[in-house]
Image (cartoon, rainbow, N blue to C red; front, top):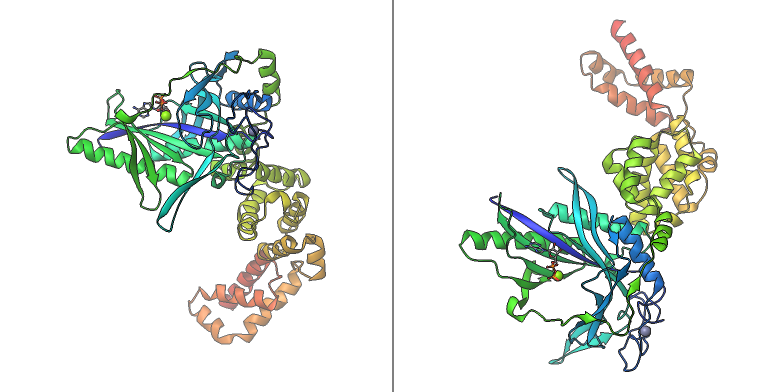
Length: 486
Ligand code: ADP
Ligand code: ZN
Ligand code: MG
């Protein structure tokens, strides 16, 4: 490709506080609540009301700013962003403009070609708007508004145009979501719209350092929409430049069904928001002592945890990332190791990423509430590790544990599943199978070596799957080579 893509992301993250940004209304789950039940005169924009800043929202924003290595302003200013749209009853949104809470941060991401640092330009506090639903029925079209979301605290995190591929954009978005979840400031439930992306995309000839004309793709609410729309724009812009046409500076929407962007606004139609300092709010003052207190309470962040899992437990980066992505999964893994300290960490990781993840997928349960506590998985893996049961039996036992909540020990004892390693007993089984299958034995002796696998299967079947496979294999090899030399 002769062009390089240049991408900057704006991420809107709702902050999961108990109440809204400037009033006492509760922040409710958009998918579970009746429309317009969490509203009051302040968030519906009645005349004569006054906003009051939510301290918890500021604290959450400080957490994020610290996690992104931003410098935090001692004084930041709320501003009015004026525009009329029916989801915004006041006719303006309270945001931060010239003096944001946080600036000049950095987010480290993993890309296919190694680690990269993406600079964060700023992070500022604002309020969310209401939600419009456009209806069209019986030849009539109209819009319904739900103001439950109006006034929910929102943190806007703006990157520098430092990303150059769809993979980097995805990695940045995922890393940021993981951080927000670890900090406990956002559920990360993308399908509920608690994180929304805006992608700014331009291209330039490879080797050029100037920025090309960018488009802005609005309101992307899934990783998939983010990736597809950015890829689509990179392709479109390359095509235009190839044809000698300029890229127009436009605001675009994304049509998920058709897989295309469409123009919402051209440069000429761009809004003039007539920003000015919010007269109803004093400057926001964040004392350094407050920042220090918040910093002291920050949890270990996902990247540090991934690196620790690699270092302390010898996991691959890919496995560590899968375990760490969700904080509860990482906790579960560490609790298994704490309960069974002599287990190889990789064994525990494999069983969680394999069997437990498969169960979570099919059952829809969360790892925090499965019926197998970490110590229970530790006990089971102990039985596998010490060869009391083989891996296949272990999987069957775990499946029953997940269903019933009974312990590994109980199930193994009750069903007589303990693996048999007794050498004499196994030698007897092997001798029996060889004696009962003279035709297969002579083919084997005539050179059909692959039959040893068939013999192995017969012995395991005779043992009801409980024989120790290593002992069976060794014994079979011994008896078969005795026949060869006989
Ligand atoms: P606004 O969207 O309010 O006009 P900015 O000009 O600050 O704000 O840019 C917003 C986002 O656009 C930032 O993430 C920035 O990195 C990105 N951006 C700016 N110029 C370009 C460009 N030429 N190509 C790609 N992204 C860009
Ligand atoms: Zn309210
Ligand atoms: Mg923008």
